[in-house]
Each structure stands twice: as structure tokens, then as C-alpha cells.
Image (tube, rainbow, N blue to C red):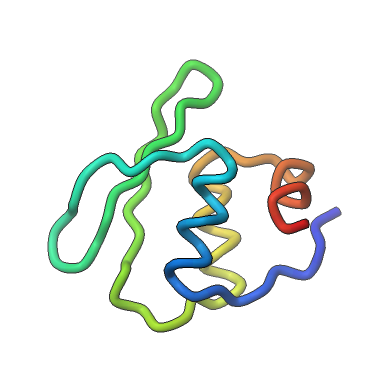
Length: 79
């Protein structure tokens, strides 16, 4: 079961995913940055819109799920 997901600023989200093993991949179009996570033998590349002031809890959860984090891993990251 997931804890209550917080809303995060862009820098907070980046620190969170980097602590979970994600790495900066490259600049995207506009103000997007692409991050990659090597999990389950796959490279998961996810764009993150850095122009947002604050990300909603639903957006944060969607990003973490796109990277392939399980509920247990998400709870560990949020500690």
C-alpha cells in the first residue's frame, strides 16, 4: 500500500528519482529533461517537464510508475 503521495517541486522530484537510481540522459524539447533508469534488463527513459512550478501527487506517481518503481520501492524513496 502506498503512502500519501506529496506534491513536489522539480528539484525535489529530481533528487527523489536520482536516489532511486535514475540518471540524467539528455535535454529534451522545450524545457523537458530526459532521465533513464536501468531496471529489469530494460532502459526506461522518461521525460520530465522542468517548467512546472510544482508537480501534483498524481503526476509524481505517474513518473515513478513509468520508471518501473514498485509500491515498496516508492515507499522507501518517500522516507
